[in-house]
Image 1: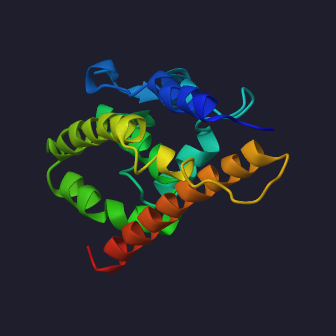
Image 2: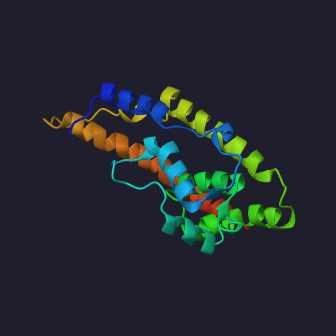
Length: 192
């Protein structure tokens, strides 16, 4: 499949459709597991690659709790803090291993264990949504991060020129993603 530079623009701009869940959209009442999965499925629908993909299943959530990625639910109910942490975990799991996420979450879990009324999760979540918005803008506006990969003209005369450009574009984004992943892992390994 060949993709032109204009089509790449459209793909990048489509990231505006990936819904960032504002804190005000998260229910103030505790939710049961089915309500949590429905909430996640509805609010993060734009992140699906295929319609049949699941955003977060009951099994995933139970495994995250067992791995201590977030505090255990209270009487089978999930609080607003749980929901915010699950949204963050959803985004992290595409980049980091469950073990790395668990290590990253230790200070949060310790804070909530010692101070259940802490506003730490809300503070982190506010910063998280702000960073999501900034990341989308950087990708959309920053030549060096995006279209610079399309500017690398192939000096080989080939009928698949646009397909080769697409490959280079994906490789370029993958290089950034891989670099960012390695940096994230090194930060986690540096004894948070």
